[in-house]
Length: 222
Ligand SMILES: *[C@@H]1O[C@H](CO)[C@@H](O)[C@H](O)[C@H]1NC(C)=O
Ligand SMILES: *[C@@H]1O[C@H](CO)[C@@H](O)[C@H](O)[C@H]1NC(C)=O
Ligand SMILES: *[C@@H]1O[C@H](CO)[C@@H](O)[C@H](O)[C@H]1NC(C)=O
Image (cartoon, rainbow, N blue to C red; front, side, top):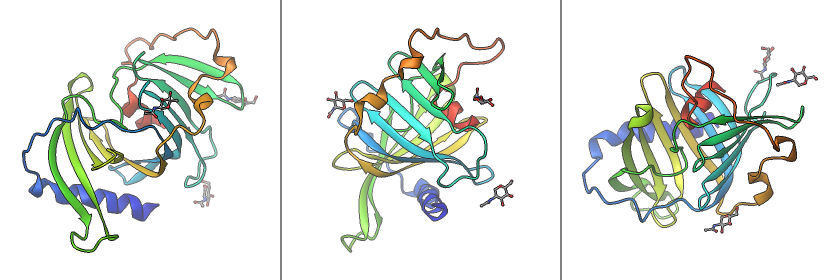
């Protein structure tokens, strides 16, 4: 896992020099439905923040992530989030204790979809450009998220527009998301609905003096 993340990271570091400015529109590039494993790494400290299974419904823009112990040494609570980007809310779920909180999301942006206004930078082969099976052809997209004062870069496959990795940075956060073991479907649509014990839960106010979380700040706190 470490190797995978480092390999992904080095791709980003090499890219700056190659970026051209085709400025291809991204409206033809939408993520498919996906189920897979998401790994989140903080670049400061090279720390793996979280890894877990997720599902994403790209039509209704619903996302569920459950942190797993797989690659972590966490004795505490493992996160379980269900996010509804269009509604701007997320559920913080505890299946064990059957408790549920409903909170506001400050931005609709997240790591598994190219945000609005993204600019196409370059199309290139990762790996070998001559040996098939030793490469993958990707598009690189970049842009800004003014509402959360962040910048991002996303690599996607060319044909299906499957996001491979997303780099996000703001004043206080630098995160790398790696998307692996993906099948392009929502395996269990039920899992993208709040569990019964979330019924009737009221939207909690964000504590005074705090900004509501967004996808990225939430993963920075796990
Ligand atoms: C996990 O953390 C505990 C306590 O901090 C430590 O004793 C143990 O060696 C760690 N295990 C691994 C595999 O890092
Ligand atoms: C869940 O329940 C256990 C035991 O009842 C308790 O110790 C723990 O603090 C609870 N966790 C949360 C997040 O409420
Ligand atoms: C994605 O999954 C949802 C079920 O969660 C389904 O309603 C929708 O049609 C699927 N979209 C595609 C493009 O398959």
